[in-house]
Image (cartoon, rainbow, N blue to C red):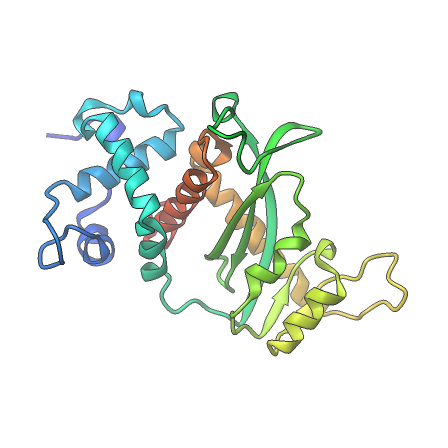
Length: 256
């Protein structure tokens, strides 16, 4: 019997057994109680983020929406999503490290968090957040930050490249600052960043290699294939960061 249409993107047996299940809490042989529905829960969270639907619209065969949402938040607060992504980022290709940022439209339902709006600000296009992303030479995401939409791209560069042992750093001219260049060169990276027009002493860069920077832009296109990433519905910045981490988990397990 074929699966319902809304379950056509559920995790395959191969991906589940080889890539996902071995790293989850509650699995057989792990410390603590055994969770009997890890796979169902992961599929439910993927469905919510892929469709951008409200939690209460979760199809019943994925389980109770309230319990699913509570568990999503519990894993978020305990760093489970982040840890799972770190486990899956195996052997990244750091010949090149590319960084960039992209605006994310904030849905009206994401406003009004307790204590005030989190990680969002008014821009020309309305209320926005911003994803800051670092990808490896294959365009695979390796580091993510979330800020308000008015945050300057270059202000997050230090955190994106810190501790990464890459040969080249590729970024657009918005990242052309003495501090970023100095940090990259201190990490033994060759900087491939076009100089700003107002730079008094223009710096040369590899124009042919710079053309490969489109890989980080492609990564944003892949991230935004899930509607829950293309538009921010989460009130809490931590929840939206977890959502982007989960999307990256799907990319690293080739669930496109």
